[in-house]
Every structure is written in structure tokens, then in C-alpha cells.
Image 1: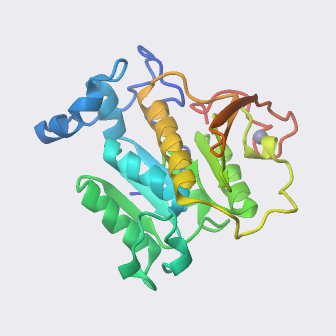
Image 2: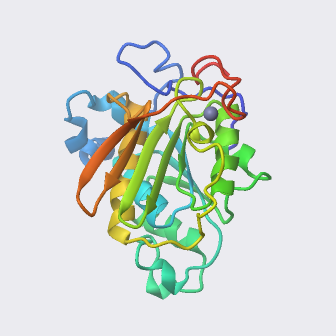
Length: 280
Ligand SMILES: [Zn+2]
């Protein structure tokens, strides 16, 4: 099911209780089985059944479902997000298995995206998965973003991240940006036209960045879990999301910093956007 590129999300990037845009599209009803499954989170203050219905009606694109994106996907599937669009190419390799918990030793040599899709469906059989056996490219990115309400960027390479950022800004889709290196994580939530985008934060790719980098699976898991929480906040309206700030976590010392982010007026990706993401 492709949505047109101009489709406005069924909720603005920041849903506030009572915001008339929040329920612009009818929310899906919950079944009794879903009320049972999600009862513990429905009881969270500020959550309630409408938040669960928003999750059920949401489509989230995740660029790469390795150590980082795989953790995002697992917790979004468990939380009851209705539809995940997953983009990841290639077969499972032995070196994936220290961190990519949607992959298995039994699946070595077989499709990563097939393994991720199967394991997520085992976790939540009601989840709809759009499994794309490709990484994000200039060719496929527009169609992928158009199908989503929110985008999660968990790709390892700047070129891929820039491609996704440009398309998400053009389509006015919020992006949860997450990254890991060694025992450090970075996380921020981008609202097109309101906050700094990836290109504002990193106008040029790091010259020292390599495809292979030191990483521990537990660090990817912490970062992915936090990124999933950001998506859940955006969808449900739980406040506050991590906007206008870059969270930097040093998991070696368990110390956290929040750095203020700033838009670049001449940003090639978001500089032309004058208002919020709900007005394409
Ligand atoms: Zn920007």
C-alpha cells in the first residue's frame, strides 16, 4: 500500500492532547486481544487507549535493522505499532551476530531482512511488515518515505543517512536519528521545519568514518531502545520528545549530556521549510 508523497501523517510530529490534527484520520479500533496484550502500557499516565490506537495506525520506516535498527524494530513491534517498513540488504554474516539480535546462527548466508521479518512476526503476529531487501538509495528512498509516517535512521554510512534525510525533509516526515560507536550513543528527534536536521548537525561527512567500527551489541540495544521510545512519543503524544537536543550517552561511564541543536538557515535539506511537518 503506497501512500502519496504529500500524505500528511495521521498525527503531527508532536501530538498534544486535544490537538484537532491528532485524529485527522480515523484511528483503528482495538480488539479485545489487543487490549489484553497492551493493557500494561495503556495504564501509563498520558497514554490510554487512544495512544494505543495511534500506534496501531502508525507506519514507521526503519533504515537498516542491524544491531541498532533491529532493537528499534523489536520494541516498536512489541509496543503494537501497526506497520513497519524495513530496509536492509544482504545475507547474514558471522560478524553480524555480536549485535544483530534479529539474526541467528542458523540463518547464516540467508537474507537478513527475511530473518528480521520472521522474528518480528513471531514476536507480534498482528504486525504488518513491509520487508525491503535493499538499503536506502536515491532510487528507492522517495517511495519508502512516502509509505511512512515517521522515519528511523539507523544506517551506518553518511551517504545513506544524507539520502534518507533529504527525502524525509522533502516529504515533511519526522526522523529519529540514532547512532552508535564504541560505547557511545547519539540520539535526536528531527521535526522538519522546526528542529535541526541531520545535515544541519553534520554539513559534511566525517572524513574518518569507516564502514566497520568498534561496537558492542548492548550499546546498540540501549540506543535502539531509546530511539523506539522516541517514536512512541511522537506517535502517541507522550511528552516531551528529544527535540532541539542531541543526547550523547557514554555507556563506559554511564554519563549523559544533552547538547542544544540549531538549524542552519542555508541547510540544503531543510532550509526551505518554513513551518511544521504537517504542512507539506
Ligand atoms: Zn537541515
